[in-house]
Image (cartoon, rainbow, N blue to C red; front, side, top):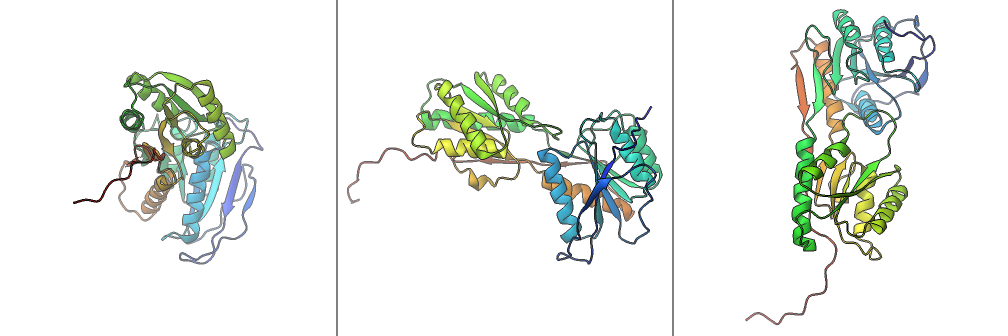
Length: 342
């Protein structure tokens, strides 16, 4: 039984005018759309809708920005729409969003499932109506045949590589006698959906490497909040020699305190970032750059290819990039002057 509440559907429409990379976007229109709203007007420009589990999440923001950029300046012209499950509504409400999009006769939809077990029937109906359907993330259950699916590469092997590199650097740069110095895990406090959550993977990799976790610290999204939380954690646990993080703000906090001359504790750090350029964190032992923008681009490419009757693979896995950094960028003691070479 599908839930149906009359005032819960939220769809954002971005009308694209012109063509090419410099085509402008008109004023954004965002208002509730009730069932029964007239369908989109017939147009040679396809209407593509991104259906999200929520609008209040970092991953949702990145995907939204990617779609907006592609609709305005991408190689293929399309009109971007967006729908999401409003706050306070159950995840099953996403099935009604999908059905409402079918009734409005969109041409393509990209769906990040709130509950993969609750939307299979709605997606199958959309596909059978001739709509190009692409899913993001976990596999949809209850399908008679698979839909094209775009996902990020697994984070568990990457988390293990981060820990391995950080431990190696700690032994080299800090001279740790133990192969398993204590660690702090910085966890960004998030509400809502995330395609992958790196924190559990980092904690599992630490346990696998027999690294004691001194504390797992939640912090806000701003740089001052994350820096303050980390400073408090290091003060409470001066034995810590590793800092791991799952967000841009966590990485910036670690970089900032790593270079702070007032910070007595010496530590190596690494983790996952979203939009930070690895060059901004030069002292990091290891970084994994999550490729959500690449995932969004691949999802749009796959949806438009379906509309053009081109063959598409059942699954595409977007590789996340691993960066091994400097072992320790903190200035060391001055070296004794050397005599001239003979």
